[in-house]
Amino acid sequence: MSRPTKAVIDLQALRHNYELAQSLAPKSKTIPMVKANAYGHGAIKVSQALSDIAPAFGVACIEEALELRDTGIKQPILLLEGTFEATELKLAATKGFWVMVENHQQKEAILNADLALPLNVWLGVDTGMHRLGFQPGEIADIYKTLNSSRNISQPIVFTSHFACADNLDSDSTLKQIQTFKACAPVTALQSLANSAAILAWPKAQREWQRPGYMLYGNSPFAVAQENADQLKPVMSFESAVISLRTIAAGESVGYTANWTAERESTIATITVGYGDGYPRNAINGTPVLINGIRCPLVGRVSMDMITVDVTALSEVAIGDKAVLWGPELPVNEVASYCDTIGYELLTRMPERVPRVYL
Image (cartoon, rainbow, N blue to C red; front, top):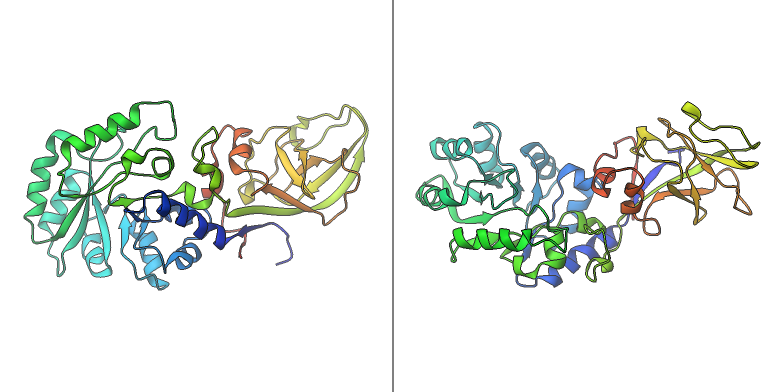
C-alpha cells in the first residue's frame, strides 16, 4: 500500500462509545447498528471488535447479515427493513436473523411461509416519522394475528423510529414516545432509542436500544451536549502532501479556476478526492489538517486530488500528513462546509480507501 490515503479505525474508541451507550441506559440491551458497512468503518471488523459484548447486531438487509454470518458472527442479526422477498424468510429463520415487520405484505408473507423454525419478529409502529411501520390504530389486531402464528417465536418486540431526536428543542420526540406508549402493550419488549435518544432522551429507554452514529464517535446534535461530548471519533481519514508549488497573486488553482490567489501562495496537493469519498462540493475554505494545523481547501475537488493553501505554515514538505477528518477535525464540521451531514461522508466512503485497524 504505497498511496497514503487511508481510513484509520480506532477499535478502542469504538468500544468506548458502545460502553457509553450501555452506561446511559444500563437496564437496556444495546444493539450496534452496522448497516452500510458499519457507517463506512467496515462491518466485519467492527462486529468482530464488539462480538464479546454485543447481544445482537443491526443491518439494513439480508445481504449485509449474510456477510457477517459468513465471517463468524454468531449473534442474532436484526434486518431493519425486514425482507423484500418471501424466499428470504426461510434463510432468515435458519440463519438466526431477526426480522422487522412493517407492512401488510411482509406480515402476510410470514403468516403464509412454510418454515422449519419460527422467526423472531420486531413489529414496526409508525409513530410520526411516516417512513416505515403500521399505523398505531391497527397495531393491536396485527399483534394478535402475529402472536398466534406458529411461524413466530415469542416474544415480539415493538419498535419505532424518531424523526427529530437530534433537535433538542423539538417536542416531536416526546409526542412520538406518547403515541408509542399508547399502542404498545406494557408487557411487550420494546425498542425506541436511536443514538440521539440514547444521549438526550431518557424517556425513550426501553428493553433494547439501537446506537448507530454515536457508536462511531460522532454527535447527532448541532450543539454541544454533555453525553455526546464524551464520544471518541473512531475514524481518522488521512492522506499526505504529494506536491508543492508557489503561485503568484492572480493565478488560479484547479478545475473551473474557482479560486484565485490574492497574494503569492504556497499550494499543497493532497492525494485524496471524490473518488475516495471526499465530497466534491466542499467549498473553498473547508479545513484540512496539515501537520496538525488547519489550512483551507482551495480550488475544486478532483477525483483523486485536492489542493490546499499552506502559505501560513512555516514548514511543509512532500510526504507531510494531511487529515481530512478525525478526532481533531470532526466530520460534522467538514460536512457543514459541504451542505451535508457527517453520516453521508462516512457511509459513502468507497472500498478504494484502505481501512487500517488499531
